[in-house]
Image (cartoon, rainbow, N blue to C red):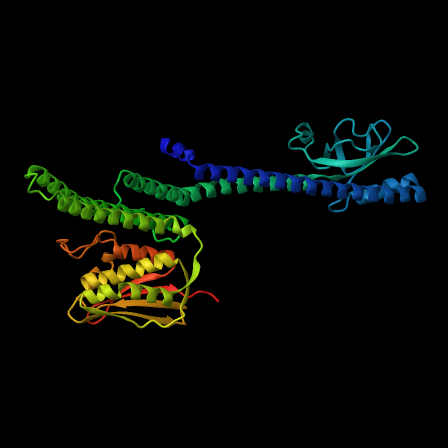
Length: 469
């Protein structure tokens, strides 16, 4: 019982109860309104029929006299389903008709009776008049003729009363069925919905407690609860991924910053502990400045990624020529590539108009060429910059390919994360933020970053939406 009462503390139960009360009130009002209207219609029809009967008898009285009128009333009262007829003298004694007894006072006032009255026909038990609840009721018109005789013409009101009784019983039955149906719907549907909400609450409590491996239950009914659970599960999955990424980034930052800071401290300590005359302070300071510059580069890269993911997204993109950017980067990096013993080949043909930020796209291309120099170097190797256009999906693709060792398929998605380096020993220069920055830049431009095999080597493809004319 306590569990049953506690169910009404829920919004669903309260709404169901309110809807049931509102519907019941509307049904009761409608039924009583229709019943009253129908009953009034039947009473008006009864009055009209009595008035017609009175006019008919009046014609008989005027044309043929009182004696014939009494005989006509006696004749009509004997017909099956006849109306109520009664002829009484001025003292109230019944002379003719089919009514044997009346409620006292009915014949006192001529005209329509003020309210329905009880009566008894010939053959009825006279005691029925003493029980108004059980006695029949009628509506009549009383006429007083010249000699003081009173004539009553009426009609039984049993039909309107039976109609009201039938409608009231139907209303009570309907309300009972509605209440039973509402309870059954709540028990089999509402209670199940409440149980699902309880399971969602329990799963949410575990997630709030820090268990991001949990997921909200999905029943497979594809209803609003399932759609809400699926949306929240997607959000939780994204949060879990971000947390894992944040944890990895924190570990990587700690590792990448600890090593150069440790080297800087060791060099300073060695310089201070050595002989002042033999110690080359200038060399130590230059090494420390180099380490500091590397740390600044890491922080600048992180800040640029954050700006791309947040600040730059609010700025309007301009129309730029991808071919011009590729040519400028090729002129800038060609000497560096030659120093590494390789050749930089530019196969880009323009114009290639796209919507974007010139400095960010240039940063992305320079990052890729810098990675190709560091990780794709080989004797007499070649780094190629090329483009292609796909009119079907309206994309312009810029590719940078080298002839190095490439990246295994299992690591091609992982290397797009922050501080991810396939060189586990971290002996090669770099911070592991290059591809992460490129990926953020491509997301800003509505494009995507793809890593493919160049056979041999790695081919990095940047896909940009073509600018609208």
